[in-house]
Image 1 (tube, helix red, strand yellow):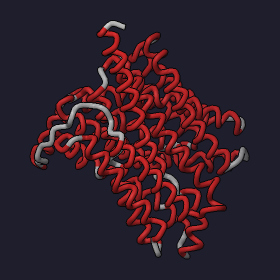
Image 2 (cartoon, helix red, strand yellow):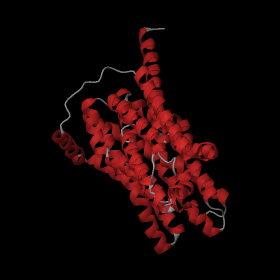
Image 3 (cartoon, one colour):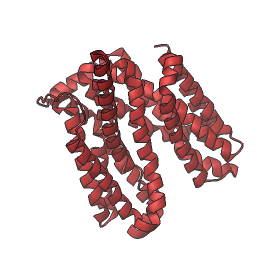
Image 4 (tube, helix red, strand yellow):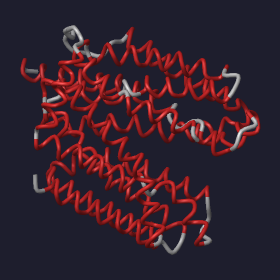
Amino acid sequence: MAPDDEGAAGGRAATRRLILLLGLSCFAGALASRVTDPFVVSMSEEFRAQPESVALLASAFAVPFALVQPVLGPVGDALGKRRVIRAALCLLAVFTLLAPFAPDLASLAVLRGLSGAAAGGVMPLSLATVGDAVPMRERQVALSRLIVFAIAGQVGGGALAGVLAPFLGWRGVLGLCGAVALAAVALMVFVPPPGPPEPRRRFEPVGALRRYRMLLKLPAARVLYASVLAEGVFVFGAFPYFAPVLEARGQGGVLEAGLAVAAFGCGGFLFAALARTLLARIGQGRMVVLGGALAALALAGLGAAPSAAVFVAAGLVLGLGFYMVHNTIQTRVTEVAPEARGSAVALHAFHFYVGQSLGPVAVGVAGGLLGPGAAFALAGAGMLALGLRLGRR
């Protein structure tokens, strides 16, 4: 084998190892995100609280995840992204392992909030680390592989809770999530990701604010941040209404809604399998337009599905279309400001979670005025417009 070929093969092996290690970290971070959802009823009985109060544990995790992004991005740029990921995983393991010992709901909510803040230091900085290490021509495929681990964590957390609930209860399941995070810490310490040593600079808050102002002045960055906020509204705004829509039609309820959400995750796996082929055959621009069109078709299908089977199938198509668009935005964000990549990706994650927070309100208002079918169709039209807009760039 020629030296150039050996170097290329070594580079590919290093990239695979990097994605595997960061992917396992993202899996650990995502696993704990929705794991309390199936335990709302049992927790409300144990803590003698209203189910609505217990359901806010999901928000207790998600809100700090979003709010910590503007801080952790520049911290990663200054101190080293891999260092911050290791520290975040360590804190996630500690807080998640402490959660099973919470004596009351308030204590558990605090620990879930701290866990969410720690998890916020894993996925966005992992994306930025891949952006540092992988050339642009290969980056979108590499990021699609990383997404697989995060999706597996999100889907697996709910599945793990459902399967193990009769045996371990919520305390045991949370403890298991903490153990997974601890294992990820051990991997990152004893089998560190490949790459040159990261420089360490002093963190300067004033400099961080200056970088954010610089990013928000870039027209390309503003388009990407507005786009990821919009897709958070259009796609994730529909999720809370899956079960009520199915129940109102007599097509099922919680089970069928859960299957549709799981199918959405499977759509992400399908995209990861097809990403290289799609990029090679139709290119990034056409792929993002196709993704917007598929998402629009799927959302319209959710709004008019004649059966639960069609509803679940629409969830699969929605996942495929969404990740075509979302992965493209992620890839472009990693290149919008290479000298401040951690900050750029953190701002991306912040806008995405803001969109997810606003989405249920927007879709709920539209559904109240026009009906849920029309609200889903409007969200679909928004995704189609978004795909067309990004495809032209």
